[in-house]
Image (cartoon, rainbow, N blue to C red):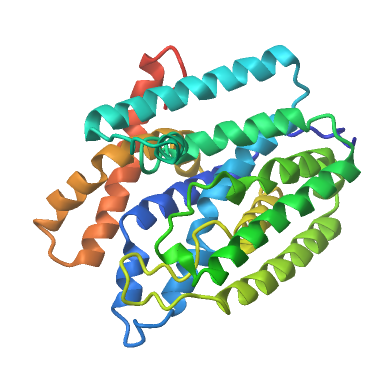
Length: 337
């Protein structure tokens, strides 16, 4: 195991967290759907759709990979594993419970309804915490695997994603009526990638040439898979949300996130504003779920251009949410924001 240069603070991750949380907010404001629908070629996919699926949707697997990598790089005991899982479980209970109370969300009274309700975190954005818990459990279970086993696990999980995608294609591109964004199989490669990256961290970051070769090769593979996936895009230009492809049930999604995480390891500095947004990205995520629509309606009542209203809303959410999260984190004993 190559762990000689265990990282301290990684400024590249500050840039990624700040960028990713901005992407999440813009995605939930449907900015890219609005831009795509306004084009003359709106009934088919266009560059705004490609940007959404290939760039914006890197945020969730990117966040998950950063979290898994930062845990994988540590030498952890059974007690620290349990403490970490307990903290994540409390995080899930607190925010999913708050969401259920605020929205009166209720599961469908069937086994599948109950299972999907739990994995979707009450029905929407807090599926992220369920995925985070699953990934960290898998990461702990495979922490002592040899590299060969990790590579085999990675290839197996990528095959599972490809198989799931192929099944939905065979069923008439069924992701247009089936929500797959919360399926755990979408993110199962993450813990394997995290461990492989952690074990080879110093060898990669100490050699710019090696890092460029790895990132370049992964980028080419990502583009190749992306081109293949778009060949099976659904005719979704007139559907709500323009679901040309599944959000995350795609190999290019998890590989693309891996590319940007790897590339960020060479970044050496991040300005104070970026560090501020990064430090509070979890809080922004949790808070925006509750206030996004209200803030947008208030701004849209005064600014009647939808795009301008969305962009201003995004800025308000980012900076307002960051300040609120900063205050709440200092008031709370547990890390819940």
